[in-house]
Image 1 (tube, helix red, strand yellow):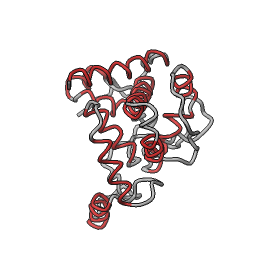
Image 2 (image 1 turned 45 degrees about the horizontal axis):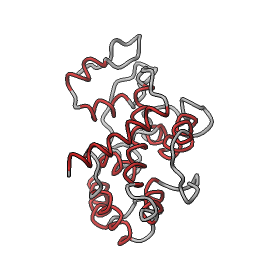
Image 3 (image 1 turned 180 degrees about the vertical axis):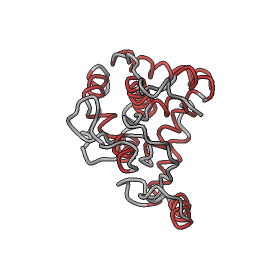
Image 4 (image 1 turned 90 degrees about the horizontal axis):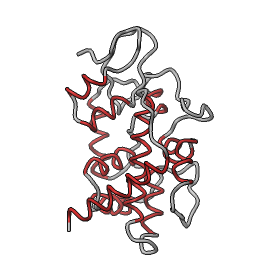
Length: 229
């Protein structure tokens, strides 16, 4: 199934993606940079460094899912399960909660993850060129992300460390939920907006200004709550 406009332009055929895939899948595909070479596509199993499927890696994945392990620095299993339970109960669209789940498991298609799978030659952020594009870099530390947070009214009672994983931040936010109701929902919705904007920019789109991303995140949270009432 060919979804590139042509080999020379090295761009996704956005019309075909819109016809064949759901919106969330389309956004995820647009976030994958195309190779500058003419090498053939290949299937990659994300749970193995070699990219090859093995029964052992699948078994390990199942155990991790059951035990809640392998989910960042968030320390003990019971705390992780409590955190995931809180996330799935949030008043957010399912696609945003799915984004949080993927970010929490560090399986979003960041350039760091793509480079590990040898899908892209390096993991350097294409927008700032200053660091490896981890999920945390994309959502909080890249210039594009900083512009969003500068325009927000967020006043987090802690500083996000460069070593923190997505779940570490959510765990810290959950402790502060009593200070500001719906803080966690708005934070996750904003992160989703930043990630979606990043994918649109990668696909050659214009992207959105920070204020627009924030406004859309706030509307998504409020409209979903009104719909559920």
